[in-house]
Image (tube, rainbow, N blue to C red; front, side, top):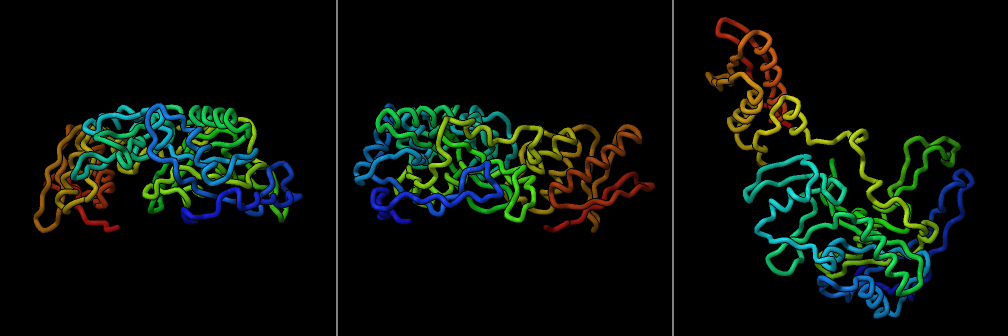
Length: 365
């Protein structure tokens, strides 16, 4: 939908579909949705009444909020209104300060890129610290409690309009296994962020054991199709989800996996390094470099917990291992094999008169 799409006032609200008999305990699926961007909000500054700006933008389109509407609002304008800025020159320190833990890191020509668990809740690049669409030599921070921001915005919208609406504060993140980025729910109020269908039955009568639909994330992604970082449209109205609106709910933080349920708590390189006692070794670069570069990094990682490795190449690249005793030597050999794997290399341990060697080959992809 373009910025010249029909306003909410010109298109009737979606009519909910009938509830399937097989799933009586869950909200009906709407037959259609309206998703309309809200232009005209302008540059948001610290101290601005963001709810008032949103309502004014609606009125400029000859529209208003109704019970059951959902507003998806970019975290960027929420942070701007709250004055959450820091000097751009201190960006790396700011990212670390906004991080609970580092999940993965890579060196780049301009510094270190990190995927972290942010103070704001989700796992994302650079803790959400952002320099795009920010005035001056500053960076923008995410709210420490995005759900609280969503609740406050919802309350203020009700004060201004009398409407009981849902609010989704959105942000952008990449995803494992998929290229590109999509918007997700950073903060939520007024709708249940997760529709848990486990225990219900599908249309064939089979019991669902896994399905839990991330409704708030789907709302955020749909809204992003009509918003846009280059169009100056930081918010969108979603109409047709009235059956999901009501009560503040548990918020978006409830969507973040806990440690016990997080299968991907560390990047694959970071997980191996932590296991072999090399978590403190400098992060690898984004571009892996030459075979020799990769071999040298593997040797550094393998010896972080003890022992020594000498890189040899007499036509067949190898690592010569030295350690104090057979047990330590065997442990070093296993650390070498693990470290090689993180560099897409393979190794074969050989024992002979020359000592213990690990013959190395390129594993490719």
